[in-house]
Each structure stands twice: as C-alpha cells, then as structure tokens.
Amino acid sequence: MSEEDKKLSKDTTVNLILNLAKKKMDHDENAKKFIQTLSSLTDNFISHNNDESALEEMKALKSLFDSFAIVDEFNSSLIIDCYFEIKISLMKWKRFVNKTTSRAVEFKTILDQMYEVMDDLYHYEYFGFFSTTINPKSLPELKLPCHVYCGCISFWPREPYLTEEGKVAYENVIRFRDPGNENYFCITISDNPCLLESREKCTLTDEQLESIKSFVSKNKDIIIVHAMDYIALDSGDLFDALKFKNSAEPGISTYRIAYSCKMHLGNEIVESNIRYVGMNNRSYKEAVKLHKHMIAELKANIGKAEQFDLADSYKLISLKILKPKNQN
Image 1 (cartoon, rainbow, N blue to C red):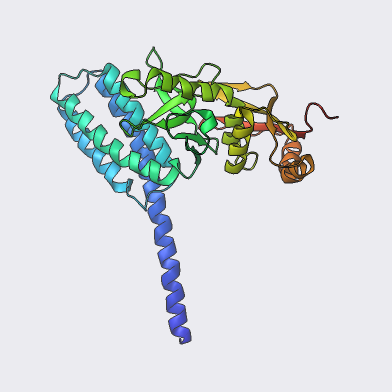
Image 2: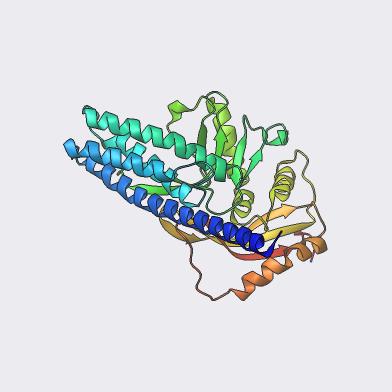
C-alpha cells in the first residue's frame, strides 16, 4: 500500500469515528429532548388539555422517538431514562387521563408502540448484562417457582411507580419472569417485600409469590452487596453465599463480609447499619487478598464528598473481611 493510500485509509477511519461520535451525540440529545417532551405532553393530557394541537404534538413526539430509538445505534444509559419515562406516562395515563376522548386513545397507542421498542432496547442493552439470573434448578434449596434476576450494578434495582397520591417514586427491586405470561415483575428489596405491580397481572399462586418474597427477606443483605458492586460479590460468590445461607444443614463460615452503604428508600437517602454476609467458598486469607484493593480505595475516600446519583439504589461506604464469629 502506497503512502497516499495509507493516508486515505487513515482519513476514512477518522471520519467514520467522528461520524459515529456525532450520531451518538445527536441520539443522546434527541433522547433528552424526548424525555422532557413526553413528560410535558402527559401532564397536558392529565389536565384535559388535549385539543386539536395535541395530535400534532403526538406526531412530533413519535417522530422524535423514531430518530434515536434504533437498535445497535442507541446504546447509552439514556435508554433507562427513556424506558422509565414511558413507563411513568403509561401509569399516569391509566390512573388520571380521561379515556373517553379519541386523542387519549391515540396517545395510549403511541405510548404502547414506544414502550415496545424501548422495552426491547432495555433488555437488549442492559437487563441481562447487568443482572445475575438465578435458575430454580441451580439452587433448589431456595424453592423459587421461576427465574429470578438480581442486579449486579447499583442502577439496575431502581424501578419507578406512582404513590397513592400520584407522585413518581422509586423502589429498589429484584425481578422475576412470570412463566405463565412471560412478563417481568418486581419484588421490593425490603424487610417486608411486596409485588410492585398489580397482583391480577401475575399468574403465580399466592404460595409461589410468597416464596419469592421469603427469598428476598431472608437474603436481603446478600442481594444488596451484589447489587452495589460486582467486585464486592460477583455472580459466582452470589451463588456461593446463597447456597451457604440457605443450606438445609448449617455450615461453618470461613470468613464474613461486613459492609455498610447508603441507599435510596423512596426519595430519601438512608445510611445502613453494618450488614454481614457469611461465606465459606475460600479461606479468610484468600478473601482478604481478593478484597484488599477495594477496601484500600474505600478508606482513601473517607471524608470526601462523593455524589450519590438518584439513579443508583445503593452506594458502598465501608467493606471489611472478618474472621468467623467463633475465631479471634
């Protein structure tokens, strides 16, 4: 290849990279505009302000959506924001919008179309990649009726809902897939876990649903540390921790993970007490070595002002590896 050809090839590559970067920026800007526009349009429908201009606004909204919501092109974290905003609009439409007008019906049709696309994008780009699947056959001691999904990064457990007053709030959740209809449902990560969606939509029996709630309440400390940081408790360690915690024959731990965190509960930030996770998948010395760098980083950041993003469920504050209770 001549020097001229090499230069031409290099220039072509550079231009391609620049074009892709510009396209990504354009998609992100359109996505941000979409979120604001959808929120405003939904509020207008709630206020019964859905006159002739509403039709043009809906068409413009759908055109804006189609400009960026493209598989293999739109892959930024704004997928999550768009997905949640459409969910919120659908919830508001169901609860507040006057459904007798043709404009409201048309708006619902567009919302459904956009939800279908964004649901595919969310599951394609984020759902599986940032969660750990628990197959009932892999851990029969948990007695789960279906596949359960636990987040392995702090934004994954967040899920929007409407309070009784109609305000938007968020819960931290695990998710499961209903084998009866293939839909995903959310169970809150709390002392008293509950189904976030309408009970009538879920085909599981009350007993099956209670088994998932029991799984969450018993293993909450394990689920939370896994959701905060994959390094603190990766998928393999998650399975080991669950097996050890739920074994029919109690074993002897070789070390304990002690941690504390900040968490978003509703729209408030709460700091947890120290939580403990018993483990027996490696020796105490091996566990100390494995977590050495993370512990040092956390200690170095003590006293520093760090942002706790509203999009995150949890933020790790402290982490220690302790010997079992019966050892000094």
